[in-house]
Image 1: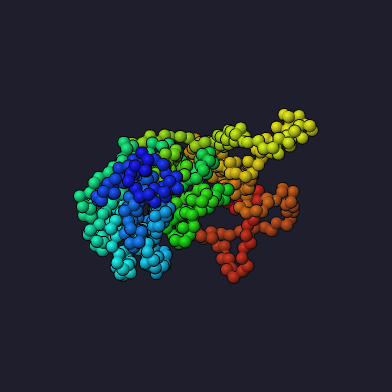
Image 2 (image 1 turned 90 degrees about the vertical axis):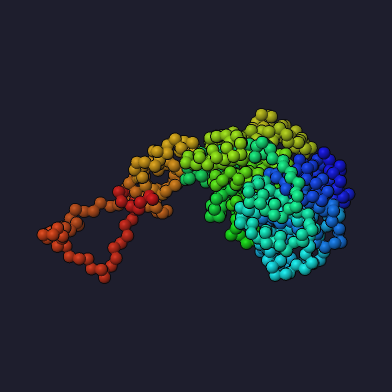
Length: 542
């Protein structure tokens, strides 16, 4: 159904059309009439179903452009706070509606000043809003419409007590709306406390996760995780992706690895300053950063419609987190992919996710380098097929076919294109050394036996040590120097004459098994360090 038939304000409808919205989503069709009628409401819908417009459009249609703060929207995270504020501003700009985002990490006085200048909509995080209210910075703060967005995430983040405290400062004659993806008992109890005879709306499908999302898992070990995710990103070639890590340290390390391998990636986690977090999200939205490596808390509330892939670097700790993570892709009717790396001991967690989400998560094998190359070639051929032919290219082709035959010309041009494609993209970067699936098959051999033998995990060690993890360094026999020193050739060492060797002194052992050898003088010159080489000693390759 079109938005034209929902009873919205004309200026709000103009903002909707400028934003490119044509058909209302199921949650919008059900929620907008209820809000316009003035009822309190509890709405349950998954992330990415259009909840912001479902509560934003009707309340902005009802407010007075000259009446001060009339709408309060409470969100769990700073990122969601900024996004909701930006979206409502775009939708309400033709109705002269001003919005202010209120969250920690920004100037308190500036936020109070912006609200006092005539903002009608305040979007806030619980902590900073409660701080303003307790310190009486917000004068004449009586919003008529109060919305709790992502209420279940507020519960998970420990904001339930803050929310209850905030509602003590709000007017009793208000319209309250509560939106949540899930409805645990704590959220239901909160709804009973702050809502009056609410209407209920639910667009829960039989499947908790969107049917637009293809879901896969790959079995790897911890030591293979970093190389596996690089290979999968290389193979999937996402237009924009989010990689979820369990810890801040993992996010930083993986982001550094991806950048080193040629991917435009950045980390997003709680240790970043607010200014840095805003810059990362802005770069990701603008397409300057194509891969966002994030922790769960930092990525909550990210509302970006064109994320093609979500990668779970670590399996989520619970099914709800899995739903929230993969809900970042497959939005607005677009197709998406969710990829999860799983250790053999994590199948119980995976099965629990399958049971709760009722989703088909297919097992796949990590692609080989040949698979990656083949997919790149297919994509390149398809790109060439659909390439438009310019007048300059036609003229140049006619000129060059006078100098050489067509087949030679085509081969030379294709060689040039393939070489350029390899140089510009990370398509030829993947797991070092051998293919991951061969590593899995040879895992027992890799970890057992002599460390100095040929291990082949990330390169060939032909000798008993050498440099760890590299195929072109290290000794060719028993040891080898760990650093850059080249091994000494056999002919460089002159044989010692037999007569130069001094006789070895004899020492007798005492009755207790000790030796009569005199103790070494500790004040004497220190013993010279032993150099490595091709001989049996040397520095251990590890």
